[in-house]
Image 1 (tube, one colour):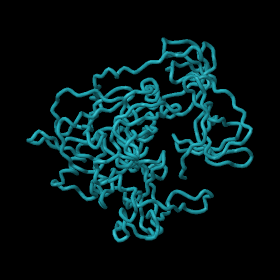
Image 2 (cartoon, rainbow, N blue to C red):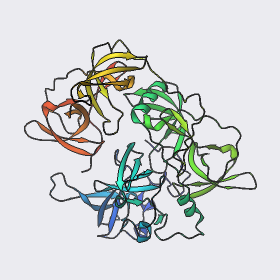
Image 3 (cartoon, one colour):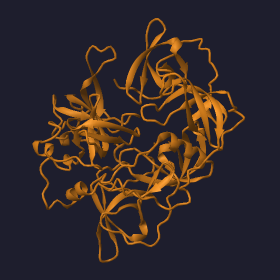
Length: 510
């Protein structure tokens, strides 16, 4: 999402300055001390699907003073050129580099317990991914939730490290043992909140039901410097199955006159939270503070005598003072329900926020498209089966928004009878029309691949000889080989119509 006309309260990330001349941002005589040829670094990217990931690499060449912008050449440790002959080299912005954490954990940290609610980096497929521990399992493993993808994956202790941010040329929290005088670091270490788990299919269905043209909403961004901020807006129109064109209430286009319009997906839109009654904020409360036209997530660290409240913003490690009228209790929009955030150790004390929107909207099955005995395709909300569709037939209606289906290939536990299952209306769609592909698939085509009796959503990574293709599956980060006959062009069922997908407009790293 664009950052035009947004102002961040986070001084450590002056977003409107990051896009000016590099001579202002990164003078060569003030390069970070860790940037030396051959130095081990970690490399991030803003590319979709890789936010929150840190790749291992080393510095090859420092920026040239006559180049704009100032980019460093790096060599990845685990990514090769397309032909696999040698390590991939790229020029990356200095803001995407930080020193490598070697070793990942100090001896002191290895002795420390990892608790539910802590932010960690998980080493997965040769990359460090930012996540949050949601459960300490009895088998010695840890369940880690990744906000970017909505996935929950188990890891061993030696595959995790405590999460840190590289801010103003120093690690936050610091690598060394923290002192008792370091109020901010102690506070952030001791008061961490759990990240709510969002069911993607449920959230998408609720968004389609609630957000129509003119609906007042709040919109967030994953853009650096704006994480955790929500801006007031209204829906202009829905685009495809999971995106919406929105118009901000207070943000303006570059001309400073017209309201800013952008496209946001269903995970970054929510209804405005219910208003709070007159309450006193306590130290440790997670709140939203209104600043620069947006609501920013922070935590109360002090109640001052003049009635104002001291707020700590974790993203920038800043402390600011606010009047109570500019604050509200933070609430998370989770699967159609407003929930108060949980602190570490409070997994069994979840609280729902009373709200008229806390009833999940139900939509009746459209019998115009779904008749008894008709072939359908069924998706699953079960972990590990997202982005897959299985052939079935509709057996009977169950109320207005559920139905019983019988799968074509899947079997019941006895291994003999076809599996029957009750599913929600948003999990079924008609069987897509067959499309005759006169021309071969091309790189970055979005396709469905027939695998293990289901159609799985993927993207063509490489075109091979003999009508074969390498297909990348983002959910599992796997690449598998398929023949042309095992693929079909991806289509989305939306409002009684089939929408054909075009190419995926992103660059895939391997």
